[in-house]
Image (cartoon, rainbow, N blue to C red; front, side, top):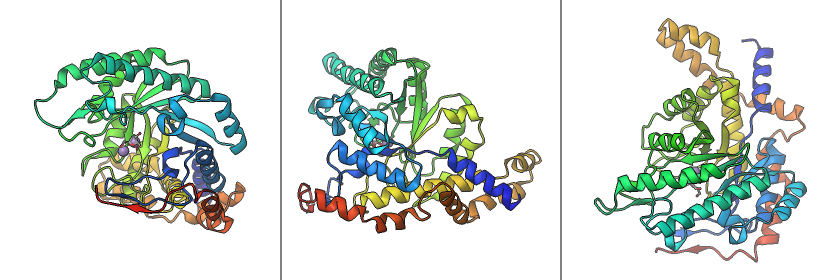
Length: 395
Ligand code: PSV
Ligand code: MN
Ligand code: MN
């Protein structure tokens, strides 16, 4: 491939690459062993919009921010004019709407799969509210993660819970408006430690299919067992037209929520390859989102670093000579095929990405620009007194 062709490919890929940032990535979070509160962390939706806008300004790639209903919207209801005013002020739009069916006491034994019909009805009401919030804000996706499950064998009927979930998901699907979708996320364990009701992509796929055509599967890269071939799952979901989107993050052990690409950048490259190898139509239906909680890293720095890494790995993936690769695969020329694939991965695309940033009027080095802008100092000064001092304790 000539240098001009490489530039063209990388620039076209970056022009079309958007990745949503999560409101909760700017907020204080922790582990059950401690919470290291950051002075500049966002606590209000206004602050979350401001931080997301800053990331978008620096990277040019994150024009939407995912909202978590109970964490961002007081009382679980959206004051639509207020949010629209924030969108206008900050130049970023509301992205996926994330219902929260895991923190209320009534969900101790589950939400949409709870044996109590009353609790299931409450869960459905929250899902319907979330659909309505998405509709009112013009957001495409309602993104469902169901934490339901059980901790000990024999304590719950796995079969009955499937039926209950089908009922609630079907009713949620029926409420979706024109242009709205529901994405069903899976996770093998945590918080449940024996069985999780939607534990893997097969369960999510079947539930999505039964719910209806506007339901798709959401792949959170951290929600797999060690060694799972995630790109193969992606290829299958593309093949059956059921891939709705991603929650990107990285992991060393389980759902670590580490910065994407920090542990295994080659995995992200392999996932992106399956996507870029699919049709333009398929690609248009895939939502890229970040789902990370940064407990130790600075929140703004970690988010900028994540978006930049995603852009760089996406740019590398765009350089795979897919026509040549297909020929080599067909002829079973294994080493040449692998080298064709890996050559793109090993290529340092950062000079090309810098050129693209310059040509689009973006900072050439977003992380450096963040430091030089003084934004983190500014928000720390403004928010510090509100945010409590660093707390660390063993529960
Ligand atoms: C659960 O681990 C999850 O991945 C879901 O997407 C939640 O919405 C998110 O994390 C929030 O912590
Ligand atoms: Mn997730
Ligand atoms: Mn997760």
